[in-house]
Length: 191
Image (cartoon, rainbow, N blue to C red; front, side, top):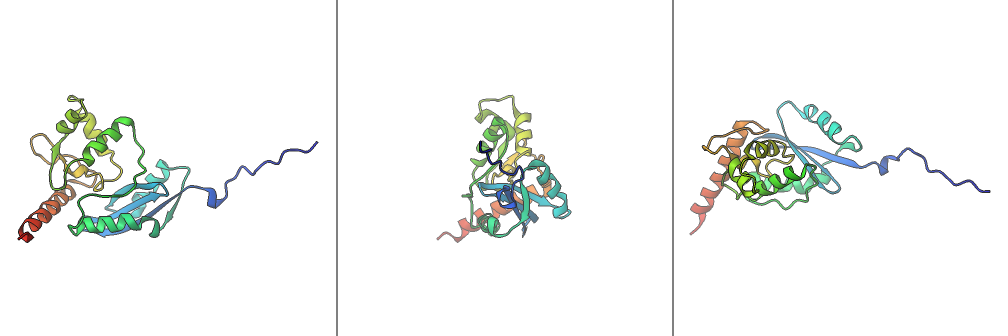
């Protein structure tokens, strides 16, 4: 009787899912961008270099191989560059985000906040039909893996204060100022 053939338990390198990352300089400092073949996974603000983010990516995606690759991230880089130049208000990138159902609902609501405008955590909680969930909205907003693309910098305190942001309050203020300046320039350029 012929014995069945068993495939090797080890995956070949080409079979291992990959996460491609690259970095870019921006108006708010150096960014790390990471994508899979399904879409954008992560944007991180780099204060101390790539070495601070790579271990977190490896922990979050233990079954994937991380590779530095500009080509895979070209669309994200181009759209981010357009955003920082004031030419892009809406991102059209495929996203491959991991999060709870609640986090994903918050991110979807935050993605709907118009360019150059702000909303409060309370506004997002009410929009989701959970008016008492302001802190949970803040936690989900803080867990946003793709800041700028999902514009968590546009979410502020109910009193108008600049509250928590993964990149730090100065970067949040700079992103909001960049958007406002772009809108002002657009209004003054109109005949």
